[in-house]
Length: 154
Image (cartoon, rainbow, N blue to C red; front, side):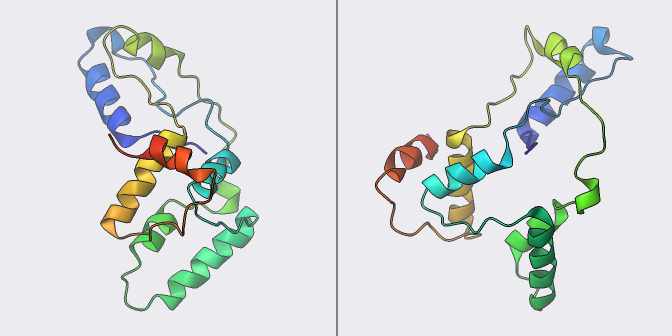
């Protein structure tokens, strides 16, 4: 699941824009080796959130149906998901993204791509809970305490 953090993208763009040697080159900021979605879902489940895993077309259909039921327009999470949920035929455009120019240009003094791991996903989930966008997970299971402590913001 490609999910390059926006703070990395914005810092990389600023760095590349100020580098005269970068002029005229192509820089891909998407992660060429994204973490599989099933691993991200595993981490979320380890934090105590029970998930119902659906095939993508079924999930997309359920998302669109839930948006029709939200008459008040207060569904912040749904709005974010709908905006980031491409149709099934849009999931892969056949392109591969070679980030070698990006890695080379940022190697010495540029920002580093953050590792997408349980800790970062935990930070996101904690933020969503603080904002009231999702509820705190049910009582943590025995194995989730370690994942939660690694995912807590410092």
